[in-house]
Length: 572
Image 1 (cartoon, rainbow, N blue to C red):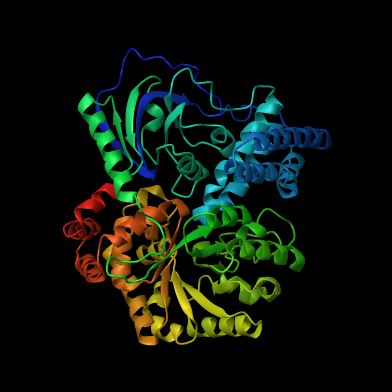
Image 2 (cartoon, one colour):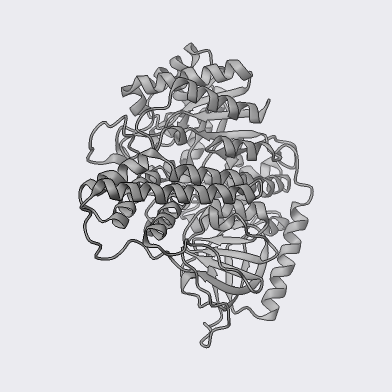
């Protein structure tokens, strides 16, 4: 990304207004806007490539230089940013990416256009995964932008030197741009894209910098405009009054007071235990999360091992990685999700061909039942890592919809000697038949993101349908309730590993419905823990009844807000 050097007040300051995005790093701040403008991109009207071999050598050198630069920066970064920068450097060295660029060059595509096109193919695959993997597109595009800048002979993108403490505003911030930021000079971060699990969100929370993502109109704010933001509720005030700034400061003080003492096991005020867990996607995530005050991981996504490569990871490679993750958590639980890939998440080594509707195609366990070699190797590696560590390992399958699929997966896991087997509840069929499914497995975990998408027939990557994907939709909560009823009938635990579990208010409803564990981005655990301790279990059950009975998502949330403890408002 290139940057705007202007940090002075603008002549035509925008009018006072209050904007709303998604708060991802709690705290309040104010300061002048510094806009980080988009990178120059590929050369327009670029001549076609006539010597693919020569062009390929130039690309390899540019990628190598980018990787070296990121590695050097990782050596100077803090403990939180270092593994993320190292992972981004690995992307720049990925042979699969180089192969994709070579394919474009062989077609005659111009050199910078070839880099752009190949990276976009990877990004489309990652975006189809959603969640953590979708957020990695920021890293990929950062590698793309830096590589193209080197090929064009212009400086790589980055945050400018800030003359005064400021609020950074961008479409999104790549890890390399956030790695060296400090709360002393960067008062806040606002982006028009990103999400709760983006690197921007994670690093901002770790650095103690208030941050808001998904703010429409963010990049239209002129440089120098004074803004105030609340990274807890996602509020950004343009040209705030003195009274509004004072109110934000008071809000921050109250939130700190509400979070004081939030430690230990998750439980309601009257002692109903609710395990609070972290969603992770790599060994680096595991090490970071394991150092926090939480009870383990409720979702270990294993896709990172399989993506961006021409061949499946070996048994030895998988065993080493799983062992590393298990050791990080010691005796705390780790819930592993087997490979969630398929038609809408293509793997070059497991291509089943085109499908009319990939989102409803052969993905998750459906792919594993066709490519049993992939599933069997992964299960063997998990069993070996379990034997080596004795960890509290629980293995679950994605995209399960029938009793037959459940029986198939449960037999494989138990035959491998793994202690606990479960399945994801991501499609309505599994929720509606949960009692039958849970009679076979030891637990289930609700993936609220996919369950919402399939319940509402709305693509979760299509922003225009965000209102349909609101986790407060009563239809979605009705399916969570149905799943929990299956858990009660069989005496088996039900967890939630979608982002809904990290909302302090919605977490109370999920607990009231019967959920016994919540897995989320690790930075959200303290607020959820504090929210639980403000309410007894009976109140959570009453909240759940109100939410399910509501006619709309808005009405559901309003009904619950009507009976919360007043101090909960300080956590939102």
